[in-house]
Length: 90
Image (cartoon, rainbow, N blue to C red; front, top):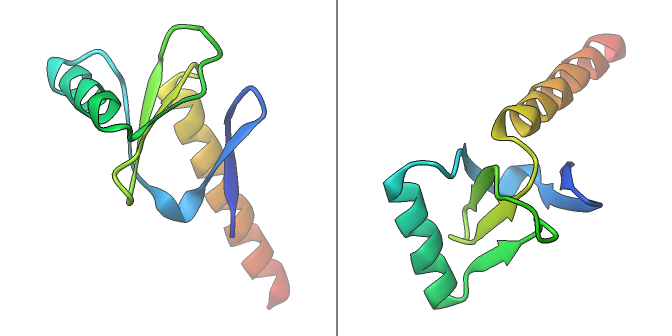
C-alpha cells in the first residue's frame, strides 16, 4: 500500500483518494460542513488555514494545510517513480 504525505507528518493511502479539491467553492464548503456534522472529517491542518480537501472512498473528508496543487504534484511524482521502477525490471 502506497501513502502520500499530506502535511505535518500525516499520510493518506493513495488507493483511498477519490478527489483532491480546493476548499474555496460553496459546494465544497457545504461538503465539509456536512462531513463535520456527521463526524466524517479528519482535520490535519494543525490549526492552520485549510488549503486542500481530500475526499476518500469511505466518504471521509480530510482537511490539509498544504495546497492541493502541491499534493497533486506529489501524486504525479509517485506515479512517475512507479513507472521508472517498472521500466528497470524489464
